[in-house]
Image (tube, rainbow, N blue to C red):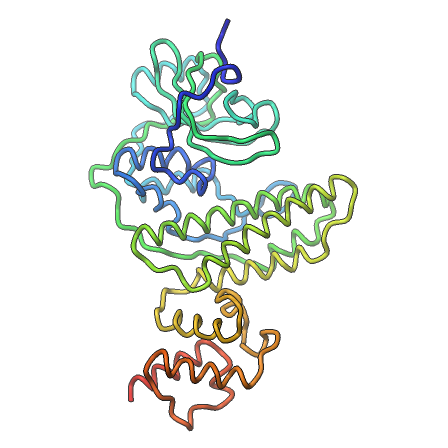
Length: 371
C-alpha cells in the first residue's frame, strides 16, 4: 500500500526558528532557507516594508495580496540567490531536478497537496520544499494557519513522487555570497478609500466578505511580521503598535463572522466597512511615517491624557476630532509634556491653533528645547 500524507504522520517540523505564524504561503518556505543559510531571525526581513498596495483581484475586488513574483523578488533581502528556475514541471521531472540539484523551492496548487487541509477543498498557489530521499520525495512545509478544513502545521512528509502536484514554478535557491543585507523599515501605501469603497459597494456580499476575510488576515499577519522585524533589529515600534495589531486581529475576526452570517442568509454587520476604513487610515498613520522619537513621545503623552491608544491619536486629523476632547485636557497635555521633557513652553506660544495637532505640539517642544 502507498503511504500517503493522509495516513502518514508528519516526521517533525521544518520551521526551526521560523515565525511561521507571521508568514504567508509564499514566504514561509523562503524563511526556512534564509534561516538555514544565515541564522535565526534572518527571515524577519521579509517584513521590513509595510505595504498597502491593492491590485485587481478575485470577483473584481482589489486585493492586498502581492503577486508571487513580487514576493520572490525579496529573496535578496534575506540573503538568497536564484540559481535555476523551471515552469510547469511534472512530478517525474521534479524528481530528476531534486536528484541533480538538491532541495527545491516549489510553487503549486494546494488542491493537489495531500499534506494540507486545502487538499481537494480549495485552489490556491502555495510553496513547499522538496528533496530526494532514496527513490521518494521528502516534502517540507513550514506553513502554519487555521483553515475551515483543519490546521495547517509545519512538518515533513515522505511521499511517492507521483503523489506530488504539477509544479507551476520550481527554483533552486542558494546562499548569497555576501550574506543577508541590513534592510531598513519602510512603508508603501495606495488608495485606502477606493479600496474600502470597492468592498462596501460590491453586490455579491458573500464573495466580498469571503475575500475580505483573506484580506484582513493578510493585513494582520504582515503587520505582526513587521513588528517582529523591528524588535529583532533593535528598533522601537511606534507607540500604539500593540493596540493596533490587536485591532487588526479583531477586524479579521469581524470579517470572518460577517462572511459566515451572510453564508447562512443573515445580514452582515453595518459598521464593518467603517471599521475597515478607520483601521487602514490608522495603519497608514502608524507605519507610513519616518521614525521620529520626539513625535512618538508627544503622541504617547497625548494618548495617555486622552485615555486612547496612540494609533487613534495618529489617525485623527486633529485632537478636536477625538470624541470627548476638551480644553481641560489641553492644559493636562501641556503640563505633562513640560514635566516629561524637562521644558517650559513660552506663554505666547500657547494658543489653541498650536495645541490641537501632534505636529504642532512637536514644533512647540522643539522651540522650547532650542531656547
